[in-house]
Length: 281
Image (spheres, rainbow, N blue to C red):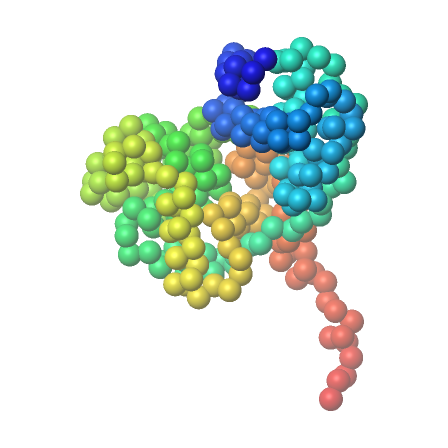
């Protein structure tokens, strides 16, 4: 099967199996990179050795992260089993050592400074929505007007990660800002509309966040996703049950949510350094 036909067939099979558009895009990009590597190296026979060489190339030369390596393996498994209809090479049946990475979190004071920084009402509304409801960037951009329930104070997330719907909270502060925003901008299909009338772009939100971080004088490496981490951490610090936080974030496993127990200041406030018991002159 030639490259173009292989890619077309792969996309069709992913679509038929009800993969999300974002997952399809990620799989296609990953598989395209693999095919180009195979062509470049004139691979004639696909075996475990070739697969290992490719994975080594991704890690050593492309410096791919753990999540990117997992994506590469998952996409290649799909390619072999569902498109090429061959046995999955044993080289793809691997487990990765888990990285213990603690996410950056802003304090409530830092979030306050950051959200007060943008002068543009739309920009402020977007950042407030992500923080106050603990949304992923793509979830925020997919919001429709009808997803905001001002009476019940809820936001409906349609087909979030894993294609699962869920509810999250609509804060009073955000509610007031969204009413003001809607009156001024009159959004159409999507709640946050770009200049050309379509969905607001992810890159634009990332640029807004970078500017807000700089203007607020925040020295931490804070991204749009940092707002989601901060939302969860602040809920935990203020006594919200971790299982409720799990539901708000849309986490499948409680273990994913429990990372916030490692960065919550509540636990650290209970611990006193032995240095504080010493009489140091």
